[in-house]
Length: 134
Image 1 (cartoon, rainbow, N blue to C red):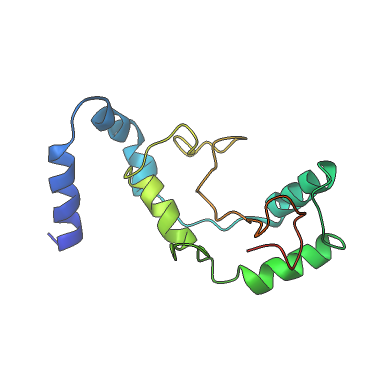
Image 2: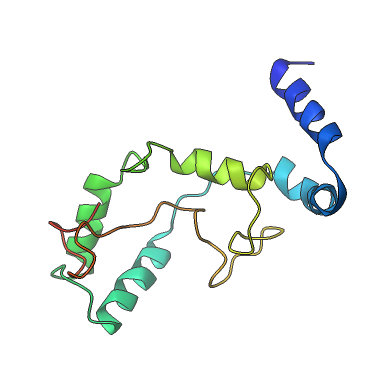
């Protein structure tokens, strides 16, 4: 048994109650986890939401997508250095539990926080733009 599996078994034996039940219910989902990048459709949805709420400072979706591809290509958090892949693994391994995470592989509005890296504004009261986003 390799060290990674041994560590997981040890953690499992230490768990109790509802947390253990949560993991049991989702174990197949955890075991079959595959890293997923944010789709173009999801990016378009994010972009359109910013237009609707008058928070967009990009010229158009093409301009935003170009910025995204240039600046988010490494998929590493600007603040802590956590990768998007690591964030997804933490969620799938059950190391962090929240109602805001996708349960049993079901993605829907409001439960995808921390699954993908988010675009943040340097100056929160200004619009999302090339100069104001990280």
